[in-house]
Image (tube, rainbow, N blue to C red; front, side, top):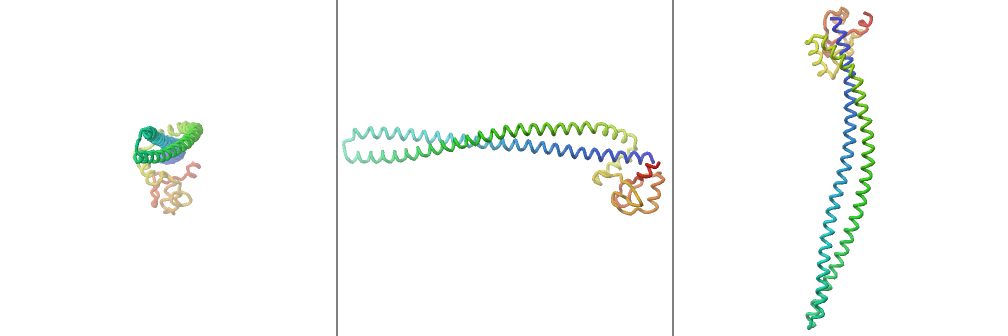
Length: 239
C-alpha cells in the first residue's frame, strides 16, 4: 500500500501539472478566438458600409432618372410655348415649367448630396479596408505565436501523459475510480499531505489515531473532513 500511496501522490502531481497546461492552452485558444472576433467585427463593419453604399447608389440612380424625366418634360413644355395661341394657356404652361424647374433644382441638390455622401462613405470604406489589412497581418502574427505556444505546451506534456498512463495502470481500478471522483468533487485535488496532525487540504486537525496510522502506510486513509486521500510526503522522503 505504501507504494500505491506514493504512486497516487505522483499521479496527483502529474495531473496538477496537466491541469495547469490545460488552463494555459485554453487561455491561448481564447486569445485566438478574441483575435478572430476582432477581424470578423471589422469585416462585418465593412460589409455594412458596402450595403449602405449600394443603397446610396440606388437612391442616386433613382433621383437621376427622375431628374432626367423632369428635364425632358421641361424641354417639351418650352417647345409647346412656341405653338400656344392664347394668353391663358401660355400662362398655364409657363406655370408648369416654373414648377418643374423648381423640382429640377431640388432634385439636382439631392443628387449632389447623394454624391457627397457616396464619396464620403467610399472614403470611409477604403480606410476601414486598410485598417482591416493591417489588423489581419497583426492577427496572423499573434495567432502564429499563440499556436507555437500551444504546440510547445503539447510537446512538453508528452512525457507527463505517458507517465500518467503508467501510473494509472499500476494502481488498482477501484483506487483510480475513487481518485477520479475526488478530483471532480474537490476541484482537481484528490491527494493531499498530512503534516503535524493536520490535513493540508482543508487545514483541519486529524484524529491522533488516524494520523498515527498514516505512518504505517498499511491502508488508504482519507481525511474525515474533506474526504481527500492523505499521504505523508516527508515520511516518504525519509523512507
